[in-house]
Amino acid sequence: MVSSLRSLDENLISHIPPFRKLERSDIREILDATTPKRFSAGQAIFEEDEPAERFYLLLDGHVRVVRTTAAGDQVIARHIVSGELMGIASAIGRTTYPASAVAIDDCLVLSWPTSLWATFVEKYDGFASETYKTVGKRLSEANNHILELATQQVEQRVARALLRLALQSSRNTDEGMEIDFPLTRQNISEMTGTTLYTVSRLLSAWEKKGIVTSGRKKVVVTHLGKLKSLADVDPTYEG
Amino acid sequence: MVSSLRSLDENLISHIPPFRKLERSDIREILDATTPKRFSAGQAIFEEDEPAERFYLLLDGHVRVVRTTAAGDQVIARHIVSGELMGIASAIGRTTYPASAVAIDDCLVLSWPTSLWATFVEKYDGFASETYKTVGKRLSEANNHILELATQQVEQRVARALLRLALQSSRNTDEGMEIDFPLTRQNISEMTGTTLYTVSRLLSAWEKKGIVTSGRKKVVVTHLGKLKSLADVDPTYEG
Image 1 (cartoon, rainbow over the protein chains, first blue to last red):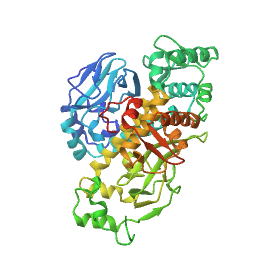
Image 2 (cartoon, chains in turn blue, green):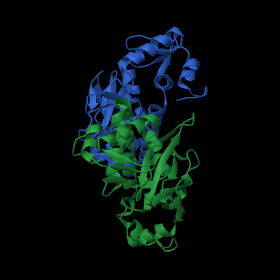
Image 3 (cartoon, each protein chain N blue to C red):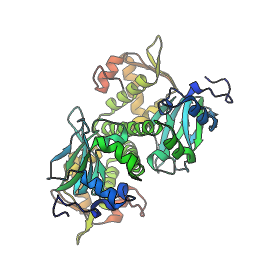
Image 4 (cartoon, chains in turn blue, cyan):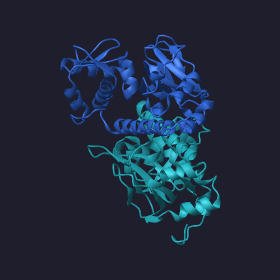
């Protein structure tokens, strides 16, 4: 964690792919142009459909990317973990944010005015190509999500959503792989296009079989192999 | 249409966004580097997971972008209409095609070796930014598709899929807006994650209400306003 927002060290971002190829002096320049900010759990970092005035880098914490339908239903499009860019509307030719970003826990965020985007792309070697890889990865994930929603049964979809989180964002505890941010049953239903009732029914059944345990905002995968089998993925699947 | 594949005229591509800002000499250079090819209905232009050796521009015809699940289910990710790039794995940091592209009707396609991608991005003004807009548009579409699959009832999803096709790729006939490529009930089920039975049931019901008519590979929207209302979109919605 960062002790002072005033003295951002180059090491904070020098390992992150879009900045990895840069000289220390470039990184210094980038850090000097940023406005670091903390957000607490539940706060919106930016909102769907608002003008994309800044782009962001999540330095610490977890962020939920949320879209809301005209009817008011929420869908969680993806989770952002530390080291990822977000709100990069310019990379996809948009001038507004396509979704809202909400802090799940305490977050530390760097951001730059969108007017600097073209400068970053032109001036900083590797920034553009890494960014487009990020966009490509999100497009692939979105297409996988479509495939799952269109062809899989509810049980398989929920299993796969939990499996992906366990592999991407968990810590090992005595109980098993604990997803390392607050996650409610409502959140799981918003990730999988499922009712809260179905999520509760599945988690209870899986708990009896020793596959997961769950609390109010906590999910622990206690048997990864069985969860993979419910998700109908290869035992070697890594997310 | 093109009378001879040997003498590609600059006008063929000079109006297409990624090439719109270019000088005639640049366009000549680009055309001289291409291998034009015809595909007939049902032929694969490229296949999911194969090395992305070339990238493509659809000059004439319609293409279905298809993914197949491990269980063998097919999902139609999107349709490509003339003037669109496809197989642009490099733009999303991939080395294999994320999906297969299948000709729906007779197609005329230009293609270039993927090794030229970096040259195009560097050398041709506006090519990169237009391409990334395309990727961004596809990401937005994919995210909308997720929202629909996760929150909408089957009737609304099927209505919205037909509505989108009618607005994007149809011709006006005496009957109404005829989707201008062969479209079966099976295709509609693969676009919407619905069973063939449900699609048939819905189309029959809508036919009785005067909203669509359909034949074996043909769908005509006969009452756009009612279809918009089934799709639960604003009357001014344009796709």
